[in-house]
Image 1 (cartoon, rainbow, N blue to C red):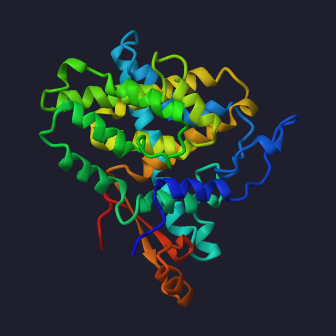
Image 2: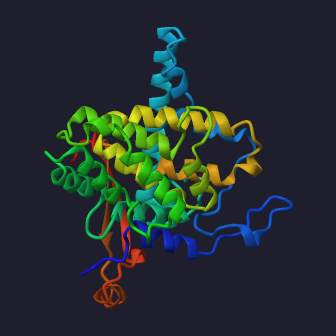
Length: 326
């Protein structure tokens, strides 16, 4: 059975899902994309919600004393762990009885729509989640030339796929920039050092190239309402080379620093990206295991016999790996 739930079809599903209006005065609803759930923001400085990533800029800044840097690292980790736990508990209980649902508050800004987003991310592409896809990619690219690795990386990230919601110009720009990396090593066998450097450069192309302003690709993809596709690409890079995660978080911190100068109403698309980024990376954290459990029903059987996975027929199971079973 072929599942119609890869990254691209997931994005299409989210684009066609209705979104309740959340427009500031003067915003034209006809120009707003409907790809993501509604964001309901509390009345506070919006960037404070992403303090866990904001602190990374202090932790990685060698101008700060070592003690302050370590405190920033610890606080950032605590905030990320708290969100990871809250999301897992909410996801596990929100689909049960109303009483169970009230036990754990939704830690996201997306309301109950976040449950469908979690299911989309857990499913991954077809029968394979993103961890398994990464394993297959690494097996395929073992002992190949660096040039071949870069070509395979573009395919793995979805940038050779014309169904991947990329304009020809953006696709060509990213392909050209990535393939031009370290040309002197093109014929060499790819190694861990080259993979690490390449993933770091790809992350910069997708977020911020100078550590201050958003990259053209980031700006374009966010403007097009495609934060999930962008987040999945960053997740794939982090899964290829986990050592890049700190650099990725530093780039996210730089984006927050740049956009926090603007009022909340002008940053809705960026906030959606940051919220999705938090959710996706919490799901794929090493300390948490998410899975989908099928609810048997005649409707589910008839629907999936047609080769379409109906996410409404599945429940989320979330487990902290540090928990003792029993």
